[in-house]
Length: 275
Image 1: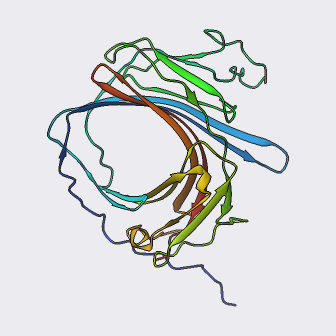
Image 2 (image 1 turned 90 degrees about the vertical axis):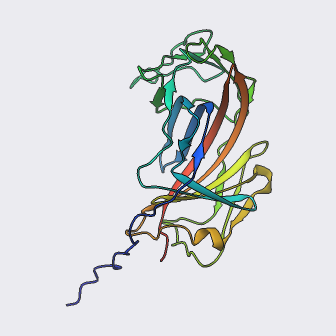
Image 3 (image 1 turned 180 degrees about the vertical axis):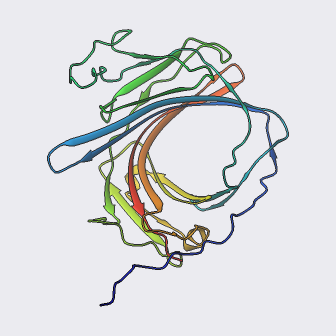
């Protein structure tokens, strides 16, 4: 009897080494609300995170990544396990007004919350804010504001942010799994159900990410084959990730710091990238 052991492993070759030159100085902050909603057979599953990072990067800092743009898309190649080295800073406790009330774990009972329904999250010793929950933070069209009490980063209040809806993926059809992605032909994606937001399509493999953006109302885009060729082939099925999301964002200046406050609704799909 012959046993099918499946496809042979792909040899992706040695890790790539790139030189992105030098960057800095800059002081940047990102405050992100990410909410994923998916429908199971019998229930709706929600996972959400709130995160905030503030990083001060000195002049002449090595950049371990290179980027190349093509139309509305960009490929980013980074050295394995590398990141721009900077100093984390704190903006103090962050208060989010406009989020849905916090649910008490394992009870389904909602808490009245703090500051008239807002969430207050304190940073850790490094100044980072991170919390994951299994409940909705917002519905599409919610209006949110974030306040920072201030520390190394001065106090700030963000402009009003209107949150995006969860987009519906039309193509690729991934039932039960997504078809393998060829690196030799353009990859077309489409979606529906979102307006007044930016749509982002991201293909992630080892060391390489290809990202394309378009107005959500466009409902489709095509990833060029010239950028797909940069992706690392999958050594095992499902090793790569296709992320499709809707995002809204606002930016503000707090002293010398530029801060971006955004809300996003991602859909994550495991995919295989062909040699």
